[in-house]
Amino acid sequence: MDEPVELTIALEEGFEGQHVVVVVDGDVVLDDPEVRTRMQIGLARSVPVRLPQGDHSIGVRVDDVERLRIGVDAGVTRWVGISRAADGGLHAATGGGLRGYV
Image 1 (tube, rainbow, N blue to C red):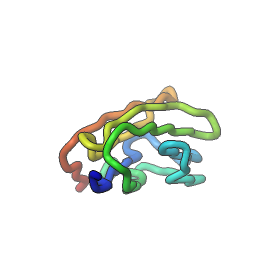
Image 2 (image 1 turned 135 degrees about the horizontal axis):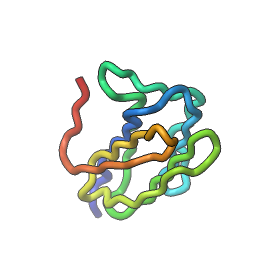
Image 3 (image 1 turned 90 degrees about the horizontal axis):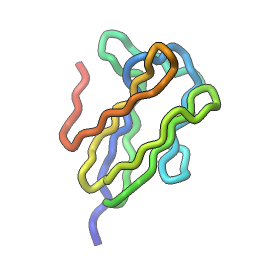
Image 4 (image 1 turned 180 degrees about the vertical axis):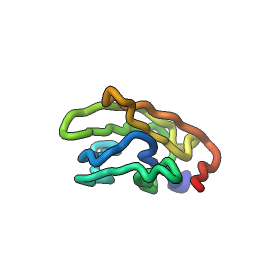
């Protein structure tokens, strides 16, 4: 059996005090009533999640409205970056390597 891996979910650009809930496979991994991006580093919150390798579903609700749902393969993906656009929409980027913030 494969060992669990760590997937980092990062709330990045564009958050200005919104209530954000992040759900992985139906389990809440973050419920923060006031997410704000730190402009110096382009990061609001970072949540490490241990998951078995394989496919997983990530949902993001902002102010009680689901804005994003994506699927990831934790055997390949190591980070998910989520940014909020000016119109309130969310955008996700994923990667398999390390993601650094200054």
